[in-house]
Length: 441
Image (cartoon, rainbow, N blue to C red; front, side, top):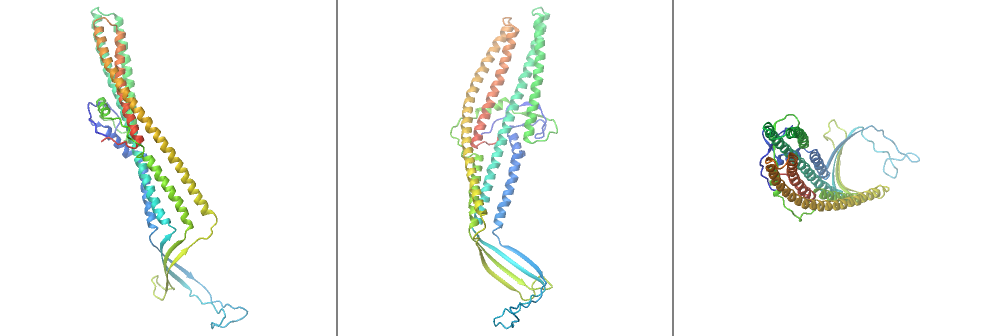
């Protein structure tokens, strides 16, 4: 999205720790802070690190395994006989058992996986796809944070603009009250005219206090969402109405966006791939496993390092489970059912995103027309108020008509700003549904 020029910011007092006193809290800074401090983003990034370690663990399973074992033997020589004593000459009898040597027996073994039914390959692919899915979840969390903070920031600008309008209205009432007092002293205006301006003064003060409270609450919520500590109250400025007008003017209507880049959809598709690989993983349990091994054993000695004659064994072992109950079959059926469930969820998500994309596009196009209507109404009310104000000064219009016209003018100013903000938010939601929402620079 284009960069926008910051113009005529409105001074306010807020609780903030993100900017220093007398600095401008821009929309870009707010969105960046929200991305960095958002709990969902941070949690997703930690989960990504977990998946990276799991991927490394899968790679580690392909490396050889080295083990050392030692055992203590305490045995007695046993003479095996069948129907009597047989000579120990190898002439047909079983002969006596070979005596074992008491003491420690050590063994060093090295096992190198060669083929485990393909589970090692499937495991690597599953770890990779799971990591891809998590990257998309992080991007989705970022865009969610951007949309949330943008809405809060622009709504805070609207409330602060209302404060500015209320303040200007109070100043206008105070000036009119002074002129009414002069007219009353000169005998031109009745006392009821002065009383009406007095009542209007207190009414305006109450409205201003309410607007200030609403603006403070909105800004506090903005800062909390940014993840900033609430510790001090420096004087800062927000980008105001001119910034909103500049931002709105930079928007364009585009019907070329699709949901193919939506991070949540991409994450769901990657999760569907992981589920498919899980089905493949369950099938590898029925395939043989092939492992190379090397074992070296040596008899008791005073040191672990072999100092006497030992023997070694080197070979390849194949394991094939012919029957282990129906557990593996149940595992296969369960993983396949999980894959089907995720497939249905992905289709549901896809249809929901398509509907959201269409809905937000229609809302944005409608909001553009509302902005034009609000702009026309504001121009009309500015001209009307100028006429009524001159008629009041000439004694042709009364105070009620003047106050009513002033209220309509102020309402038109707020409506115009709100319509632009709604249009910007609708456009942001449209980009969010397409997965194309970017933070302000």
